[in-house]
Length: 70
Image 1 (cartoon, rainbow, N blue to C red):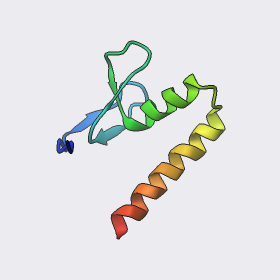
Image 2 (cartoon, helix red, strand yellow):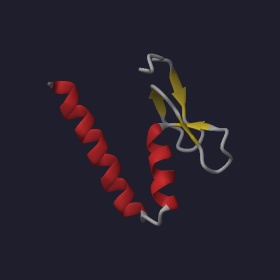
Image 3 (cartoon, rainbow, N blue to C red):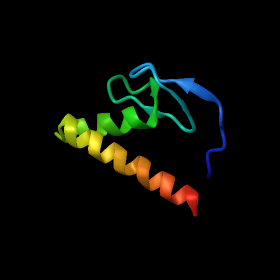
Image 4 (spheres, helix red, strand yellow):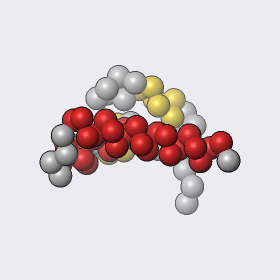
């Protein structure tokens, strides 16, 4: 099923606006957060440091931009 909701929300974790499907925070299993914070929480959970998290999130963003151009 494709998620079609395009409403803008503000992530309570980082304060940034985002659109699309939120992630569920691992800290309480009920708070919706932006996809980037969801990715960061998952990576942190497996021991990935902040610098590598930043690289991974940037790769994801770049991949999404490249796929939207085609």
